[in-house]
Length: 477
Image 1 (tube, rainbow, N blue to C red):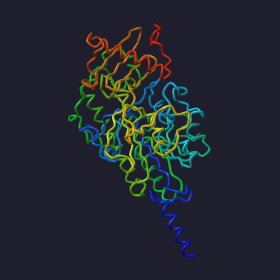
Image 2 (cartoon, rainbow, N blue to C red):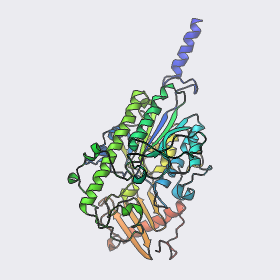
Image 3 (spheres, one colour):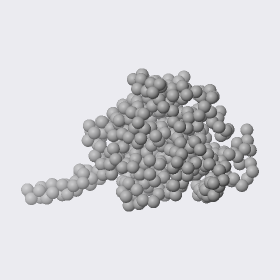
Image 4 (cartoon, rainbow, N blue to C red):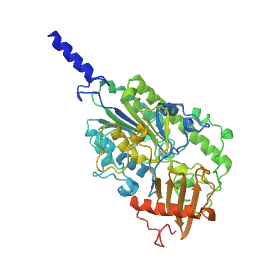
């Protein structure tokens, strides 16, 4: 019997050459997937990606371990809560105008990433914010903890300090009343993520774990230790700071813009930016605890980590506070993808959408994306087998703002408010903060026409309902 035993163990070793033999899957255990999603975090808030004013050592660790897409963006939204369609696009790999009810409802015919991975033998687990419908959540996840079915932790309902949450409901009904935690929101979600990861050494199935933070969304109330990290006297305002927006963009009275009176003072803007940075550094510390838990449980070597923000935020740029606009600070987001088998400390500048995360994950896992996915995999760019990306990306906000950004870094934004049409044209190569509008400069009339034509083409491609040829497009108040 000894030779037979030896042959058996040789077979085990051969099957486990690239990992460990798995009794269920019969080969190397498929990679786990961990998605870390922040709320209202703009693209330029990571120290490792060029912001020397902010401290993000753990996100920097992730950047050094992986690939950062430096021109990733959301597509916008048809309502003030941009995080709703942003999350729906991430979950489904579909584009803005092909969502249902602006993303609030993810219908059964739109397969979600966790729902799809469940069919491939994954355990799926969610923690934190879910801003889409509960039915979609129920079919996507078989477990979860500290769940928040809402948009933000309102101060009158506990704020970030005492966040509301519900426990996972196996029935999928989630009818229990919200409870308030005694733990800051980011720490609460990190605690639950760590508990989940600590159990994985006893699991036979790979996991898809989605951790959706509610930070750095307002209320901007970082814990004292993180508040002290950024004295407002040391905060430098960006070149595009303005006391107020130079014209009516159609959304100057939305909730986000009512947080402070206008005109904004430099002191107010510095205070908001200091609090914003404090919240991001606190979030970073909690993400660090999750990364440490992965290392401790020896899961890092077989876990694909995706870190992203759902949309950006103005925080004083262009005289705005919120994200209900199509400027770079509101549309661009951080996106970092990490796994030991991927390149380390790499930057890729192809134009990417958050919707691309779905097919990128399935591509990495060696799976075909389901037919409902519309977006494109970023994995070929990571591997280096593909260099040329999208020629342009398109943005929409409600029915009165549209924009296009090209791969060679030109951008055009069109507004129509109260029958007044405004066009902005920016050369982002020379003017990355969008401070010099070239739309009325005769020297750039041809470039303006080119981008207007490109915008109309992109609107058709992405099934936009607006028609610029109709005189009544836009907002009439």
